[in-house]
Image (tube, rainbow, N blue to C red; front, top):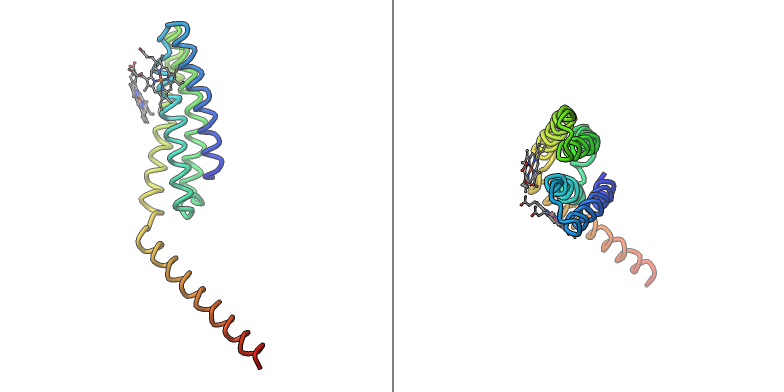
Length: 152
Ligand code: HEM
Ligand code: HEM
């Protein structure tokens, strides 16, 4: 989930900066809001969420994580396409923006709920450290025992 999100985010960055360069070269800024949201909802948000899931892998496995993933990745292209059409003079495509943006918003609600339910930093970090410590002690004891046997 984390890797997929970061790879998709990188593609949004490519599209976002390409749009920025084209806008700059042509000195036409009508699509600036599309450029802004491709970069911010595509690159920045998805990359940060990908990193969150890398730090807290337990949050990446949940049903809410999948609902967010699909909502964000289906809703955003619809939202961006609709916004691009509107700012190119096709106001009749407003419903695309409404639907796309609502789906993205609901996916964000799922992400927030997921983060609040799944993240238990202190407890899980402490438990992980303790488990690693116990495992290390186990390995040390095993090594000592093997050394004793070998010495005999
Ligand atoms: C090579 C990279 C980029 C280029 C050439 C570029 C170019 C531009 C241009 C020409 C505008 C329109 C400015 C105007 O309306 O006067 C703009 C707006 C904007 N860009 Fe970029 N951009 C780049 C990368 C990014 C990235 C990576 C982000 C976010 C992570 C970003 C966020 C924004 C935002 C939020 C606006 C809207 C600002 C406003 O409404 O005033 N841009 N950019
Ligand atoms: C479903 C999610 C979102 C919706 C529906 C939304 C909608 C909007 C709207 C309607 C505007 C005004 C556009 C205009 O000037 O005509 C705007 C501007 C802006 N939004 Fe969002 N937004 C969303 C998410 C975000 C996120 C997550 C970020 C940052 C991480 C962001 C950053 C900005 C910025 C920087 C501007 C000003 C740039 C501009 O006007 O082009 N937005 N947004």
